[in-house]
Length: 114
Length: 110
Image (tube, rainbow over all chains, first blue to last red; front, side, top):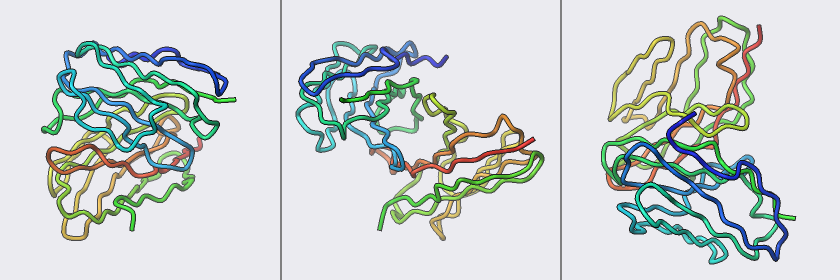
């Protein structure tokens, strides 16, 4: 197990549901990230938080709403999703944002929108 | 042109073979280069990390960066069935997010 834990591991939700993904890191890192991984596509960066402030938002639809209450926890709130949002959602953390540091990933949440 | 190009494979080799995985990129400002390994149903794990040009070796793995050609490689010597996974290259310039390739799926048969 890595120092980044994601829950749930699997999630099936209807298009009208509201759900949240949770990420927790035990590495003492200052930056946290949400990535989307779809089949046959590169990992897509969705959001970056550094010291609990959002520093990057890559044109993500408003049906995805991140929250970072402290440097150890990151949430992704989901509402009125579309079937094309089905993917593996990965959380990652790094010591700092933008510096000479690598990112450590969680196991991901496999999301299916029906 | 995509920023990072990586042949998705699949690549199938027999146990013991030398494997070469490659990525090309277009942004000459990229300075940090990484290789991640992702097993099925798992998150990516960092395998190798190099800064700027040159080689880096770690056990059976060697990472090479050729900035003049905008080309990076990962070599796996004496490949094992446990090396079967998807290998993702990633790179970035200072102060920006990682840009990933699509990943190459490798299968090593015993």
